[in-house]
Length: 565
Ligand code: ATP
Ligand code: MG
Image (cartoon, rainbow, N blue to C red; front, side):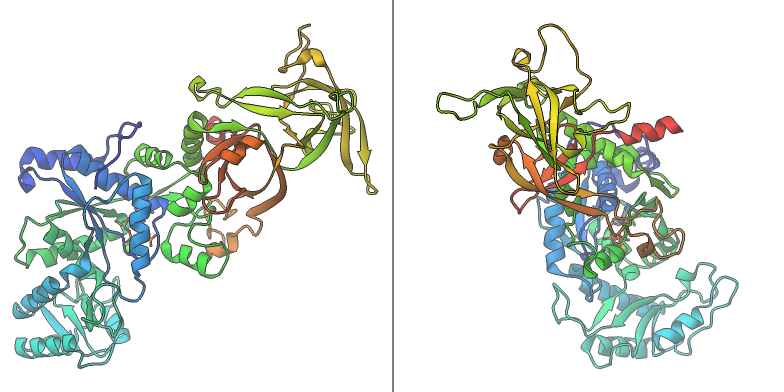
């Protein structure tokens, strides 16, 4: 896989410093190999994008390679559909998988041989105790560990039992293989950790070939070593596992120099949960519509929401790598999204909550039909090359319900009786009257237009305080628009009660079903993001026609946060 170009210069980070020092010292014979090791038990989220950015970024910068390796040691939760989904997500993010991916399950035979080797060196033994007893005996900080009565089994007996475990002679949970290290070690990971469990499970790749499965801890470091990984980047919680990984590696005949594990802080975002287990629960409980729900931080959710891949990559590059855990504001990510969309998104007019505006002095043609005029409006004022589109204007329009008030407060500059405003790119109009329904709600506004103000400017130089968007009623397309709030209302979900699900906002999605769009939006391809003028950025759904998701609003909330600091 190759890393894409990024507009954001890579910040200096401690990982790069370590790699540079290794290269200068000639460690690993000048090679740099990293890996991205997802477990195929869910789809990728934006935290993974940070890991990907580091793994691929470091490899690319030093002319090395980054392997995609599926860490598929757990047969219970892993599925081929996740493998395919992860590859698709990587491609979308800008990291195409050019060769066949690697799988930890391809190393099961090698790992098994190495396990026999450790047994032969009296460094591993079969324990007949159950899982609860083993956990109990592990002890804890300040609590001594208790050695298993099976710890000093003879090598031959261990080998025989381990081979019979593999052959499927014993029930699940009847026995495990453990490393024989030190039951009094200060690091709990070193208190005779489990290497193999008996599992009568079907594996997504090895099918029913195995009756025992390696633990993640026994598989991970060795998988790196088999691949010749030099710098194994992982998140901070694996800090205490490093000693164990190094211990395993130090007792095995490796094909390459042992990899160096370097831990970095995992990405956390405000108002967001990232752990796959929790995301899986949101999906399973139907709180969101699926792994690609636009409220999720999954890459497929963000994609559906309209986040450009380049914005996610630039964000990941910008935040870089740190050694202490911290939570980034979601507004920072959104500012990267907004910056990119401002550059590329076509401008369109869309009325989300429509109110009819009738222009009472609008002319009719010879046959008595209202005249239709067409205005050319720039597709993107940020980029003249994007050209213009033609927008139809007639005597019946839709404006935003919020843009009219019968009895406005002082600072309301939009339409109200007697007030003149500009209809963007078209004419000045002055409200003259309005119609209400039985409940008193305004259902129609009447106005006159000034024919002299064609294109939206007055030859006499008079000014108006407001420019409003509009859509011709006869030409409008009907659409549904999903508005999103944060899925979790608390900045740190679960902080108050310990349960992130307590902080779910039950109204995180509001569907508007009567939206009116300008006709040029009929040409918009699924997945594209446009700016609805004055309203925000919206992505057309990838599958469903005329369903738009609000990507981000127009206001740079990140700038506001910084100003307040
Ligand atoms: P989760 O906790 O979300 O289930 P995980 O660590 O179990 O994540 P893996 O599929 O094992 O998910 O992760 C693949 C790689 O991505 C690992 O190297 C892991 O450290 C990294 N990673 C996972 N979550 C984050 C995150 N929030 N920030 C940075 N890197 C992450
Ligand atoms: Mg994991």
